[in-house]
Image 1 (tube, one colour):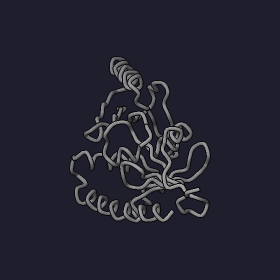
Image 2: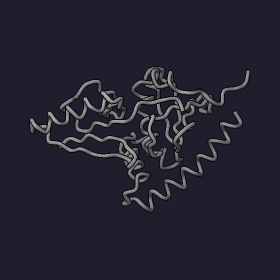
Image 3: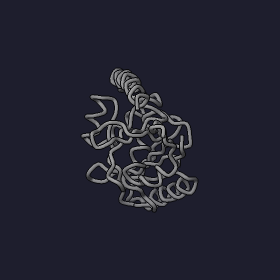
Length: 131
Length: 73
């Protein structure tokens, strides 16, 4: 669990840096900015506000109702949250082609909302407590 | 105008078409079938902002997003 927390804070500062870059280069046409622009246009108003404030956004699993946090990144960036909102376990599921972070995060959001079970069946789990 | 957005190495590629134009609509449907046949996943947004899968071409969809199949990372 410590590792998940540490990873979370590292992702947060990285996300803030990228969002700052996005704001300063809003009109740029690089793949990274295009990816973030597309992601932002598909987030719900609540998710967008959370992403702008914290660099991550929460998604409710379409089948289980579980809550997931998608952090800025291209892998190992999906955390399943426990009822008190703390990270419980991590999931790594990504598109099978090299995409920028905004695109990867959007694909993960859609997967969890629209076909959670299939997506998690393909995902690798990480950060689970040792037994 | 309706738009098909395909995620790629450049972020995305966009294809706009007029759904009232039969030829453009047929081309969009062909693109849908080619992409989903190649393993891309098609999705649209619901009115509430959630996402839904599109298993077949929907000529009324304003925006369709295609992304590559998912794998464990």
